[in-house]
Amino acid sequence: MTNSDRSDLDHGQYRQFLPDLSLPRFTTMQQQDAHKYAKAFKTGGSPPWLHSLYLHWRRLFQEPYRGITTDGIVRPGLFKIQDEGIPMTTIVEAANHLLSRLSDQQREIVSHHIDSPEWRSWSNPEFLLSDKGLRLDELPGDIRDAIMRVLESALSPQGYQKAVSAMKINGFLGHLVKAPRICNEFSYNFVLFGQPSTEKPWGFSFYGHHLCLNILLYRSQIITSPWFTGAEPNIIDEGPEQGTQILQVEERLGLQLMRSLPAHQQKQAQIYALLRDPAMPAGRWNHDDQRHLCGAYRDNRIVPYEGVLASEMSDAQRETLMGILAEYFLYLPETAMQMRLDEARRWLHETYFCWIGGFGDDDAFYYRIQSPVVIVEFDHHSGVFLTNQEPAKFHIHTLLRTPNGGDYGMALRPLMDGMEQGFVWEGK
Image 1 (cartoon, rainbow, N blue to C red):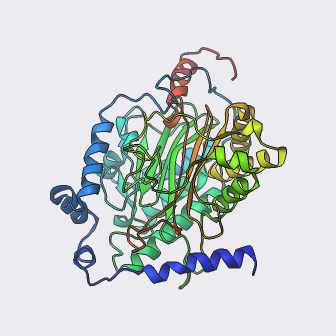
Image 2 (cartoon, helix red, strand yellow):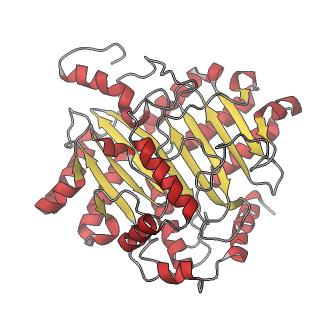
């Protein structure tokens, strides 16, 4: 049996955890659209744990933005304005084409100021917790296609395909639970920040269940951070999109890296032996993010370094680590991706790899790679729609953050303002 065959077999196991669709949760859900579903959740508070988390998120949203750090202190001077070869004219043309198709009311709904705090109000559950911008499944096909063209023009071809696959898998989930008005291929919101320009900063947010992309654009530079990508299940095993699968490479490479470490480094990397370990302090695990530390609304979280240093790994192990980062930088166009990889490589002396869980063939797990310029997380989750109470390899959450104020391009914005005023900044 090949590794690919093994992966497909493992992921196909999700069908033993298909839910009972006669339960009130699903019969009610099947009668609602996204707005009624969200209203019932916000007013009724069911499930209570998720409602409490939502209220906590909104409290976090009121905090002034600082950025994720290791100790509460933002390290300055880590990022610079640079030419990344982004086809900005093409992206601007796609955005302007979209705006030309919208009514005055739609343009007002989709458009926010470049410095709007609503950059930070994205979230990845199927609940429409922050309803801003335009929701794709409520739009006519030509406008929806125009939004997708904006997304396609800004991402690499491989990154765009990954995003589309995540959307299709979300539609497949809606099919499995007979709730296509809540989970479908286009149950995502699009928000524009600033005015499309080849000279001034602007960007957009594209967010919904299991796919959230925040993209800031400036001249020939792109920042795709933070982003979230997930799937439950992470493979389509029937129908016209059969074989669509995501996140298996990140899974395989993470396991390969952990297994390649010598025993003493495995012990150092494995910060908890169990995915919900009694040794975890309060708050280290929650129902929604589970082991993730840097998810929605966690813009200011303090995340200390944990695990083993990349500089203490072998050359081959460091290359595997860089291969993982390449998968996480996949949304970036080619030149920008290579520049991010080069930047990450310069910080290997301060890059940590940590692990939670086992690392046998059948073990679910979590891992994180963290440096001053990037954080990526991978986590196998228990069921939300499916009924597996323990984390399983067919439900995956991944995310990327740029610490030290780098998310949403915040650390670069003063430099961008200086460029607009005619100053020349070192590193341009």
